[in-house]
Image (spheres, rainbow, N blue to C red):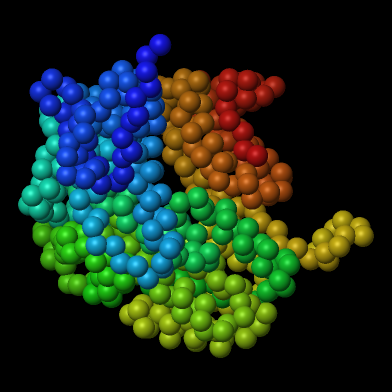
Length: 489
């Protein structure tokens, strides 16, 4: 039986080297280089430690199997756990040695995976993921990023600005698209600094945070209205939030937890990179963060964390529920006084409320938030413990948007078969369904949507085949469902 050799315990600052023969050595443990035991390299013992070494082999070979991808996530998770524990010990501690962790091979590999999974269009350099994989190579691409970060010669490129439609509104909003290299480095930065700031964020913040979702915000609102009897609602919207973030205030908030000048310089460089709008370069004026960047959601939460703290210390007896730059405040009364205090809090951050979208409503009249309609209704069940409860269902604008998407998917593409149309409809239906099904809406609302889809398909088939039966026989007896069409509800 082979003897079990002890393996070397690695920490977040350990570095693995490979010599010309492929032998692995650990440096950073003391001042010496320690050879890794043959048992580890032969995958016989110390499987957990081997998982820490595998990202180095991945980078050398330039390949990424499913098991190795899991090992990369595991090693980065170890690093994030250590940073989170250190941040939890002292909520005022400043971290001064973060930059070198950004260009760790496992961090860059995981950042590439996450950025690629998000897909997205190319930036100002017109390089998409296929171009990088086919012409540059993922290994060479990441090695170039590592080298630029290590020698501190990396400079971000301007963000490509494009204008997209606001759902259900005539105006458009700007969307910034960084180049893929900038996205990967931003993701690497986010992987490192997010565990530090996450410990400071309050429970009232739900948007773009790990293990939190819009459904958590919905449940917080429902409980506040039903059980706390907070039926006065301040439905607020910040005017042009991403375009009015003061970069100097944001950098000051970052310095409360980060003292590494290299990381701060990197983030400041992204804020000052400017944008390319229709071929014209627009220099940053010290305001805003590109909406669409990988790091923007985290930076927006850091900026509005000050607002959360001000509300917490204000003594207002209400419940704040915030999702990114949208928030509602649930009160037992005094809505106008609280709204005035909120204006003063936001003014300290150089932010203003959108007067046309901010209002004070009663829960019994209902309001929309995160695509869902909330309303205080009477409980119909006899002998119920509660006389009133907050009910949720999809907002009218959300239903209008999904109806329009269904119309766009079906369209007038008569060259497609019914099976092909169903194949394109299913992802749209499932995506909307997965979000709203947890709302516990009345079944009749989902039945109306199913009838709408059935009717649009009937019209499509009638026109495609010039059917004298107006397409009724082609959709009767739940034929489209038997062909695999997903159902709402």
